[in-house]
Length: 261
Ligand code: SF4
Image (cartoon, rainbow, N blue to C red; front, side, top):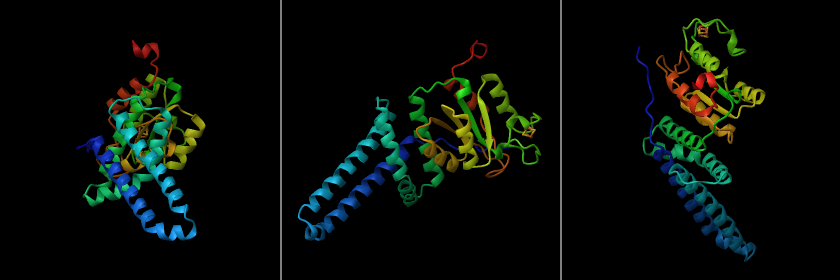
């Protein structure tokens, strides 16, 4: 069986598209302001100046935020507040970056993969380390064997551990490291699980689209995204690189003595 392992694109693709989108947004807003000056001046002589100042400040904050992200990626210390600001700007510009990618014939999934790389890099840079019970592995139910009759989305312990899908492997990891595992059918269930378990960090396994929207939805909760593998096409008997999941777990949880030794 051939496992399709998505390539890990460079972080600079997403950063370049976001910077280009920001530039376009700033130039078009400035153009709109410029052509509106006579009309605005008819209302009040001060209006063009006030509006120009407001637009200028917003543009400076947006540019500073994106530049802050670039510096953070390069390893410079960036204040937490600043990163929060930058994330809001990225969320705002993301649809534009996707459209800009299309102009250059870059697939949406490629841009999303690059975004996930950027996000993972920023989360890992914060050296997030939490108690095992505060870490949640979140995976979509398509990782379950499609013929399996057990309702693991209600309770993952309903899995009979037959080994026909990787739910068994993930449960082994939860036993070994003491972390939580939830298998969900979609965003609503995922949000409910987060509300109930209140994790301090999440290892999310999903496709490009779900990871991208999930990471943006739950910010500032630190999420490391792991792309699933889809040897049978989307949403059917998906797989994940279990070794990578385990390696990331080791980086993110305070290891219990019996695991560490
Ligand atoms: S490992 Fe669990 S979820 Fe997967 S097929 Fe077996 S019983 Fe079903």
